[in-house]
Length: 324
Image 1 (cartoon, helix red, strand yellow):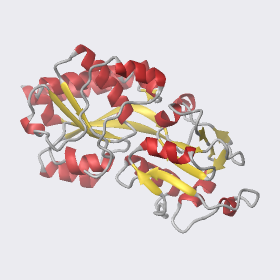
Image 2 (cartoon, one colour; image 1 turned 135 degrees about the horizontal axis):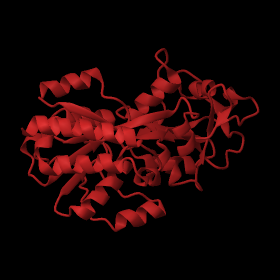
Image 3 (cartoon, helix red, strand yellow; image 1 turned 135 degrees about the vertical axis):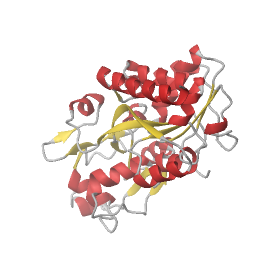
Image 4 (cartoon, rainbow, N blue to C red; image 1 turned 90 degrees about the vertical axis):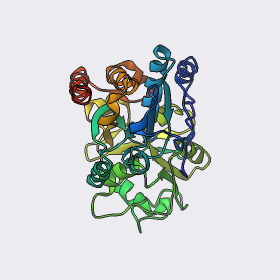
């Protein structure tokens, strides 16, 4: 796997202290996984979205405090990379996902006799960030954002507004295997336009932070949790979708004001893996905690109690079907 496979802990002080006290075991890669259908009882294997990673990491840490004998292996592979290389190949039990599973991925899972179960676990305010010294812009319209990020679009800040610096963009964003890339592409560019390729694409969200922090003409985008860890070193850009500028936040994502960049976040569970007690106990724990402050502390909107109950009902039905 060529992308970030290091399950590094968050840098935000509150989350760092919380996670440092936990005993979750996060391994760097999944090459040695025994596979979904040959699980070793106390192993839970997870890959997928870097956006959902902080939620799963925090919940896994809390779970491990109560279940220290369970080994949880996590890796950041991007949503698509997780589905294609691990989950739908029968190598992981759970895939973090910042978008819904695609039809082709469902078909691939079927070929491997993997049945994906979808659970909504949070809402994200996908965030556009810039250097704090870029004082010429605090808000962008969706049209301006589209012009910056589309293939064959603008090349310099002055192309967007003649009063802005006559400097080329320095752009950082999600890798093409990422669900964040897919969502940004759909929400901002639509079906008619392609995402530009001359940008730095990565699954390492902290690399985006470093890049934007290092250049006054830089811009990036990623999940709100990574901005909320670094509010003093980068700034969030408000988005105007026609009704005025709206800042990304937990509150505006929850209210539905922050459009079009608010989105649901998911985990997908292999139904067949629920035969393993460790997997079903972890997923049950996850569903219960996804409706609590543990999610908002990470930087996302928790699911509602109704969503939690729907998730738990779906889970228990699936458990009964595979264990009866």
